[in-house]
Image 1 (tube, rainbow, N blue to C red):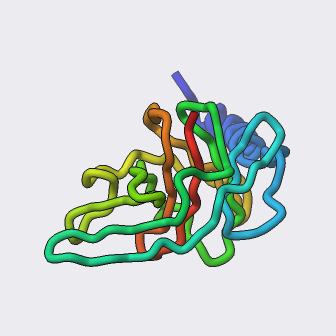
Image 2: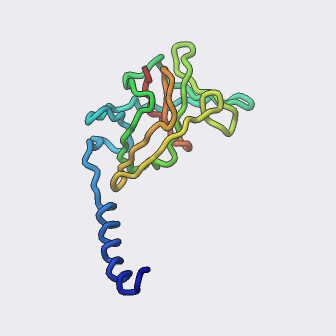
Image 3: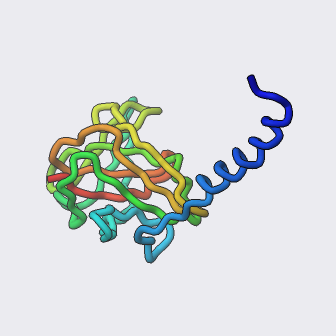
Amino acid sequence: MLTRRSLLLAFPLILLLASAASAQKYTGPRPPKPDVLYLLHADNLIPTETAEATEDSKKNEVTYTVPGTSSPARTPLAEPIFIIQTNKIQADRLELYKMDVKNGRRVVSMSRGRRGGGGKAYHLAVTKLDANLYRVEASEVLENGPYSISPNDSNIVFCFEEY
C-alpha cells in the first residue's frame, strides 16, 4: 500500500519522466519552404507538385481540375508519409483525394458539400513534431494513380503519384 510519503517521493520522479518524454526533439529532415507538403523517403524530402485546382460547379456536383495526366512527385509507398512546416496552412484541415485522369487533366468530382474522388476522402493521420512542423500520413493503403492533398477550405492542391 502506498503511503503519503512514498507518493510525495514518487511525484517528482513521475514529473521528470513525463517532461523527458515530451522533450524529445524531431531530428529528421526539415522542409526548406513553409506551406508545402514534402514526401518523406528515408532522410530525403521530395516536394509535392503545388497547384491551384480549377473549380467547376454543375447542379449538385463540383469538379476540381489540375492540368496534366501525372505528377512529377512520385512515391512507391502505399501509405506515404509527408512533412509540412506550416505558416498559413492548418495541418489538421488537410484532406486526401484520389484523382481520375480525363482529357489530359487530373480531376476530382464530388457531390456538392463533399469532396473526394467518388465522394471519398482518404484518412490522414496528422502528428505534431515540433513548432509548426507536422507529419502527415495516409492511414489507408493507396492504389496506384494520381492523388492530391488539399486544405478543406482551399483550392490549393499538393499532387503526387502513387506507383
